[in-house]
Length: 126
Image (cartoon, rainbow, N blue to C red; front, side, top):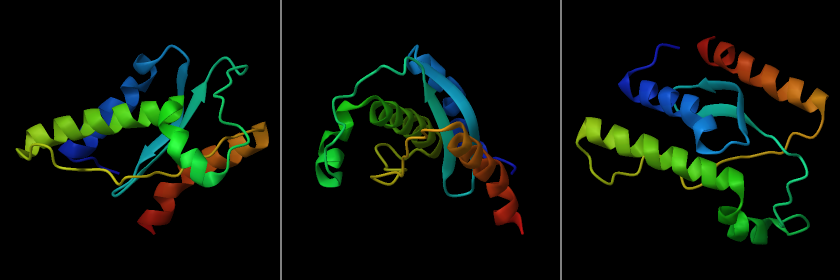
C-alpha cells in the first residue's frame, strides 16, 4: 500500500510505540486504507493487570487502567494531533471509540495472527 501523508503519520507513530514504555516490543504490523493491524509484545510476562476474571462489560469499564489501552490511547491522540494540524481541523476525531484486541497465548496463535496481518493486504488488493 502506498501511504498518503496521513498514513505516513500513522506509520511514524507505530514505529514510535516502543518509545512509550520499556516493555513494548513492536512485532508485525500493517496499515490498511481504513484500519491498522499490529502485534505489540509486552515483556515481563509475570505482569498482572488485576483485571483477569472480570466480565466483558466490566472489562470495558476498567480497560483504560490497563497498559494496552493506555498505549492505544496515546497512539490515537498523537496521530490525531498531527493529522489535525496537517488538515487544519483542530480537535477533530479521527479514530473510532473502540478497537478489537486479543491476547495471543501460544506460539501457534502468534504465527496465525502474524500471518493474517501479512496476508491482509493481499485480500484487499484482489
